[in-house]
Image (cartoon, rainbow, N blue to C red; front, side, top):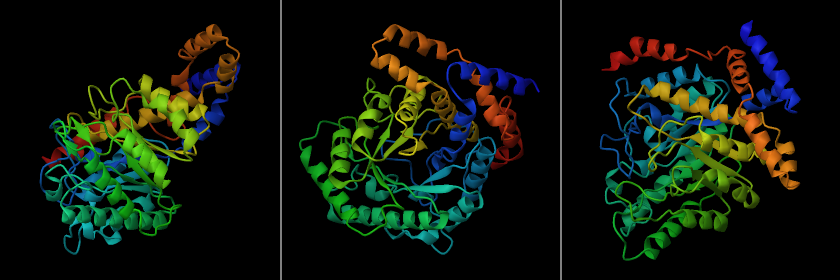
Length: 416
């Protein structure tokens, strides 16, 4: 009864500010977030036994890492039990499940993901997809779609085309669009002699990948840029300028990862510009600390600002939201839940703002009042509304980590 009372008081306070908390909660419940599968196993996947490569590094050695598809699915189920809403699972191609013999990535077929489709359909989840252009012998020299070796380049082109077919299969089976995101790790550790050549080959590879027929309504294809990676500090072929120009040239969807820019750049500041020129926008939400380190998402300034920009632009139906982080130093399921809850918290915080009033103050040049209102909103009883959102769906708001502790003891410790 106490929490209900707190929520009613909060509802009344927000109403004084012109905000309908019930409408905000209804909107939040319908927002789908694509949950990245690779948090559960440190980006290992199931199709090869080599090291993680491509400028990617998962740090830490906490026990309980998922080692099989069954363990990973069990961990996802545990995370979902502590979240509200019907979301999506974001898969990499390296998470194929082979029941009748292994095939290489250029020969992947929908059947290698049937178990994932069955898993998703049973839980009313959507599925998104990513070609995996790292952690493979044909990516060891730091080049895939930019390779000077035509055989290597063709291999990765076939892989990406196979992934389009798999994404179409996901969309047809789940009844939801399956976003397919292309990201490559190609680049150089030191100053290159030729910057143009790799980007020219990347463009030609992308043109060939997208030359096949596919249903663009079922499979929105995105292209993700990156400023640098470990061992790729001086140059990446898929820079922000390359990717933005390419999506404009080809009419596909841009994807921005807020860890893939220079430290002084903020994705929140870029969203409005992107929405003016693109019907759709995709985001990977992470937390860069010193670089693209993919820390667990917090309820921090930039996460809130990203959500605020989307809501203020009335673009919730135009932005594909996904998480992308991996921390092997803490319980991996707890990390999932913490990060996903914080994305939802940020969205709720944004939905509880009187955006029209704030806009009018700005347009009228009443900047002192605008600053004061922004500051007053920070101490509104947001927590009571958030707790109500969780508890009205039967999910713990406080002490939920006790469930993670139980899962550790009963399930994850046995994986040692």
